Length: 226
Image: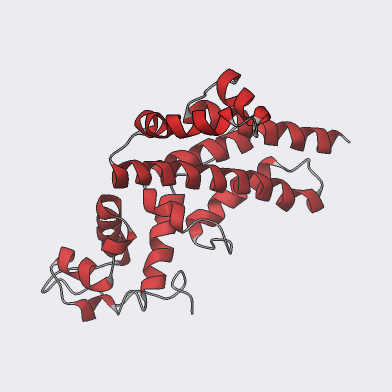
């Protein structure tokens, strides 16, 4: 029986009351502070001041704990809007915001669909908004937006992690590698790339995300009209 359906054991007020909600909340605090490497059943039990064996009545494995943590964050993603484009934009932006609040989520999203109750509620909201779209197109449309968002936010989180690891922010990193680029461009081997780097707009992460999302939504719109 999956963790979503398996009943919790009876509450025991002594030595300390437990529930899946309390366990997941403690795990979220650990992950938000120090990443997924800070999360284990032993560490969560220590944060709750209970023995690790008590957790196994509620959660059988660490994978179940990660599933519950991910679904808890999906409760923060509630797409809204009056038409398919507004709902898909809301889906993309709220997913990105959730990942930036919980950086560890970038390592877990993608792959097989999340089937927890909050993830399914998110899916219901999106598919309901696509009611006028042909049934065969619904999943490809949602998958296209999800794929864009996952790729974008993973790149953004990777940039943040690189800043922390190296101590160099984006501008400092660019300054450090500037002389190398100048030498490379001076060879004449990269004229198209040089033109873009020198003449193109240098957008921040928010602008880059919005423009890329517009490309995706415009493409979906054109395909639906066709």
